[in-house]
Structures are given as C-alpha cells and as structure tokens.
Image 1 (cartoon, rainbow, N blue to C red):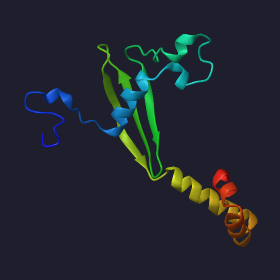
Image 2 (cartoon, rainbow, N blue to C red):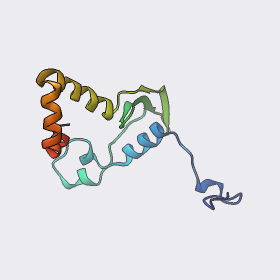
Image 3 (tube, rainbow, N blue to C red):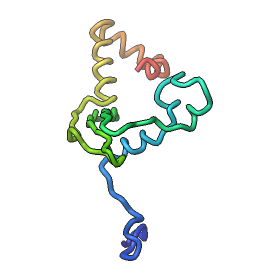
Length: 129
C-alpha cells in the first residue's frame, strides 16, 4: 500500500504475476500480424488477436539475454489459462549464444585475427553477432 498502487479498498488494482504467465497473457492480446507475416490478407490481421479455443495448448518461450525459459499452457473452457508444465529453463540466453559464436569464430579464423577484426571493425563485429 505504501506505493499507492492499491489500497485495502481497491485491492484489484494490483496483480502480481510471474513472467511466463504475464508473457502468455500479453501475447494472447497481440494482433495476428505480430505472429506471422501474411497470416491473413486483410486489415483485420492488424487488429484481431490470435483466436484460441478451449483445450488448445501452446508453448511460451522467453529468450532473454541470460536465460531461456519455457512453459506450456492450455486454454480452459472458461477462457482462463492452465499451466501444463511449470516454467523451466537455463542459461542459454543471447549472451551465451554470442559468446559461443565468438569462440567458434576464434577457432575458425584464429584468435589474433578475430581480436584485430573486433578492434578495427567494431560496428561490423556487433552486427555479425
């Protein structure tokens, strides 16, 4: 209550959710056009959310900088979401992909060459990653 977001009289103003659940609910509200290119040929693709029927299942994959987190949800008959698999993940995020890719380039071209390339062509190196 100290942050003045909610109060004893207005408890429904604040909902605390775990990141996978929040991502799931957010993605269900996105327009179809944000999921696949040319999924629909009309203008409703920009405003219509992804249709999901009861008992449909989907996976939420959150690829962050440090971790990749995965969970599986199912739509219930009342439209709510049921967690079929608890969120799980590990240290496979983007920074680890970049690091392993850089190590691969070092092995292919040699560490001295790649260090020179990184120093002389910093912008191109960042784009390469």
